[in-house]
Image (cartoon, rainbow, N blue to C red; front, side, top):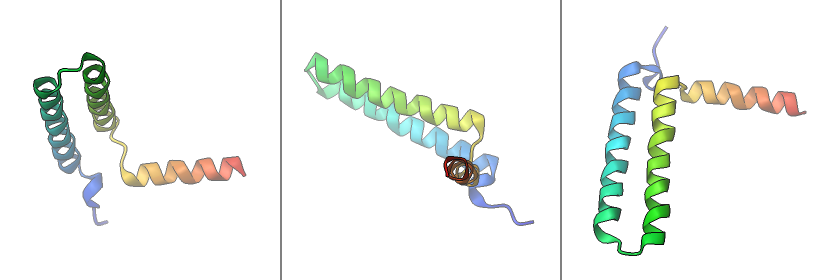
Length: 79
């Protein structure tokens, strides 16, 4: 059976690490440039939240095919 790219552990690891690194750079840029504390708080929290979601997906190992199966099951249960 041919393995799909998103199912591989290495791809998921590289994607999660790369996206987390970019989000962390985004947090650093926001902290460095923004001087409005209220805006700084919400933008930085959103970027940190994105890192939490990526880490959760990385650890849980959910793939696109898993999400598609979950969505299909939810649609069947809802009808």
